[in-house]
Image (cartoon, rainbow, N blue to C red; front, top):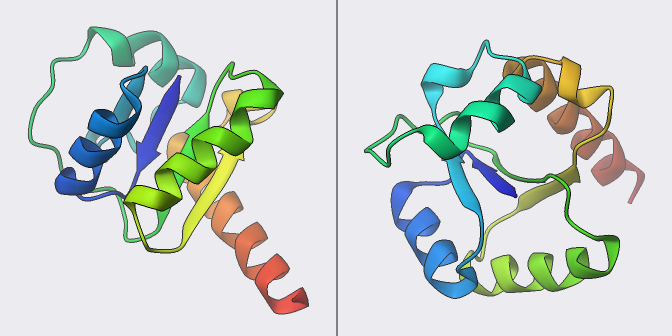
Length: 116
């Protein structure tokens, strides 16, 4: 499962067309929901116009085999020419609200970008 956070609707459509896998856009309404709950409910939600959640594009991979991760990253980068934070879920991150996770990923990204 691939959760897209902060991507405009046009980019979400392009990624879905390119990859054709379990890809879901996470919208503003889910900001305060725990990640594990989002994963349970997202497949049941109807596709709709959604309020983009933040400006930072985050591709969150859940239950994706390690060997597939580089291929997924390459495909997304081929469709979206902007900075993207790529992450996988962990037992700890599943317990966080989406808002907490976003803040943590952005902090980590800033830290590593400053280190070069």
